[in-house]
Length: 387
Figure 1 (cartoon, helix red, strand yellow):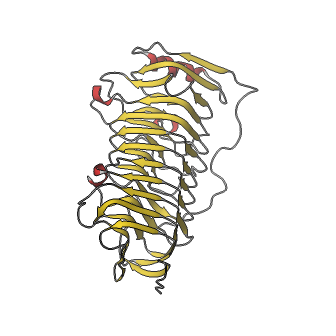
Figure 2 (cartoon, rainbow, N blue to C red):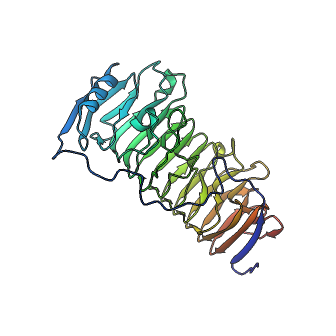
Figure 3 (cartoon, one colour):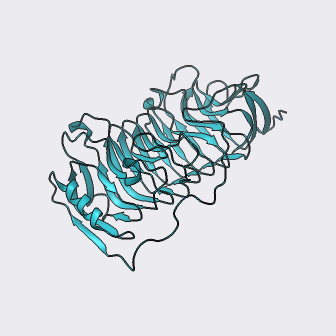
């Protein structure tokens, strides 16, 4: 059914798209066990102070303090730590600094590390998630001009974790990774849910700014909120499994691909994000704003996002929003979004098409300003309007 009136639509569409990279048609399942809830700290563990020297060898110093700490302890870093080895994050601890300028982890010249800060469960290839960690108030610098390997900044493999007030920059790989897979590809047999990434700044990374990696079905129900991501060359953020997750209030600009990729949407919320589109967004992407693949079952919401485009003469076939249905019947509420081009744009406002499933898109109150041609493209169903 199509009802056109103030761009208010209910569409049931056949879809023929196999899904985004990393997506599957597996529906999120509920789990009530499988991760360790108990507090294993003894009494009130002390705060462990690390005073870095600003020279090669600081990585070994930090790791020695972490290894000697009790579960539940806080490891607090002062100064610039020049790390020649990855910092291994033991589970159930808080890792903090003074602020992202005063407390920093910087990759040593020619260290060529795969990861700078990484969960012990990732490097030890556990089949279960680690206990929660807290990362806050420090900076991470990949020093990519002085290193040649592909380096990720922070890799977390622990449920219920909090990552906040970090500045992560100058990396050839991803900025922040929340991973189901371990270093050798071992998948979790438990859930890895209920974490948050907030108030983080990610700049100048060769991969994805914030990346949820989930080739199985474990990393769900995360909140990615109020972050700033600039100059991520593959995508601003990518959730390979977004079931139950919230992507809200993020400011993303100068991405080399889509600003936000949300795969396997199932009870997901994408709202209030601000995306500035520049020439860099068109380097490797057709969808330059928000791309969503939808699972069958519980619906998702895409509400109140703002996409501002300042690029003229984009390549053919580009779109600002793209919805893709995996097999089955999926539903999305698409409302109160703003797409504004300050130059005349050839990109389509919203695209959804395919043929392997059915997508119900409930659309109302969206504004499309400055678009040159089609506002909506739904395959066999097309609504074309002006500004």
